[in-house]
Length: 163
Image (cartoon, rainbow, N blue to C red; front, side):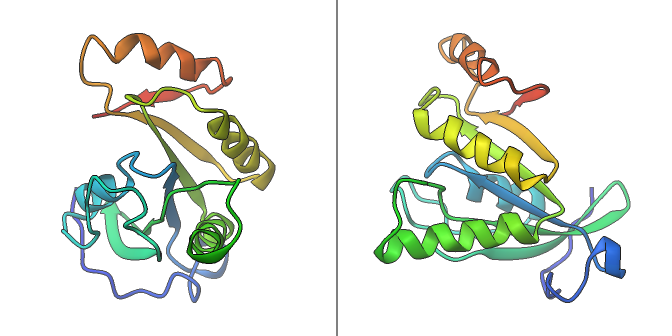
């Protein structure tokens, strides 16, 4: 896998218009979205912190996977119950990322387990009509493996455990 530095405006390009595909990473706060973004982009561009809500704006990086270049987008945590103030603006940025994406990676936090908000977010993504890659993060021990089963109850197939 070879990654390159950001510098592409994802709105000016796209598969249907000869632009690069856009892949957005979304999920609840502290699911590990920024860590995954940094790993896939091979950069330390996104701030990673145990405090929820650190990522507020979308972060962009150009990347290449199996000789296919694409734009990777990191987002703030999705919380459909919040609609005002800073959190509301973060949600708007996340919705824009979903709307502009050609593919969405939805990242669940395996340590937190399934949350009612997860089902809401999954429903939102299904209604978007976008292809979605569902992944459960932080499933790296025997204690977390049983909680992975709970995510399958959301009707997600395939579902990918990552760490």
